Image (cartoon, rainbow, N blue to C red; front, side, top):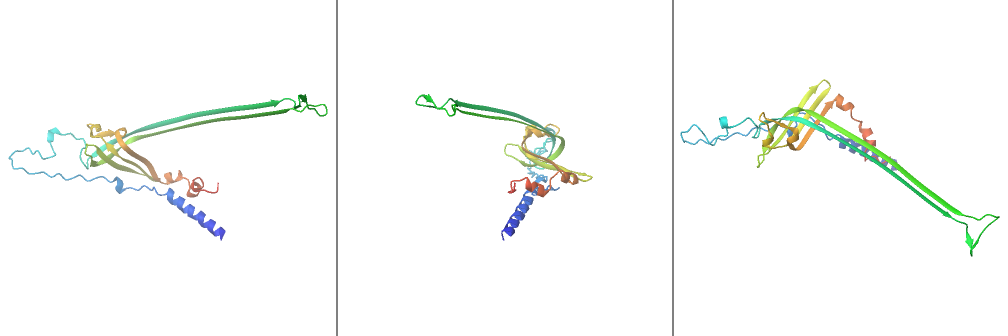
Length: 229
């Protein structure tokens, strides 16, 4: 009975670990990254006899091509580069020494067989540790995103994705965040460093991506679910 319970517990842990590690499975046409449809402009017809309509959003010569409405597109220039390094060194050294002279009684040394006993103790400890870690990442490219919401202060909520079909899989880039309308250039581009609350994902699917991942059993034995080691 005990063996059955242990086997059941192990199997349950393996299933839970497998489910926890395979929850993120990116696929094309994710609704969370779908472009927003532009809102239809309602033009109020005012019988003034003038050719100029002050209620129209199209101001002709007085407008630019920068995105400012839901459904407009912005070209994001991916320009991400990070580098981090850390060095640490620790050295500890401690030495204790204690020596006691000959044992005396009533002011006279105690001896046995012509020897006077003494007590001595020495203790020393040493520790030397060092660590060195470094990491760098770089992402360059372009992706067009859609304005999905215009906030009350004029900031634009954008999101979008791009998928590339390769021989043995697909690669994708996903971007979400908030863009200040003033940061959009005259050619309707914005740097990724100007996106607030940015979420930039770059990854791949297929054979090449799968070969770079460990199997679920190997991940289980190197996770917190492993209670055996």
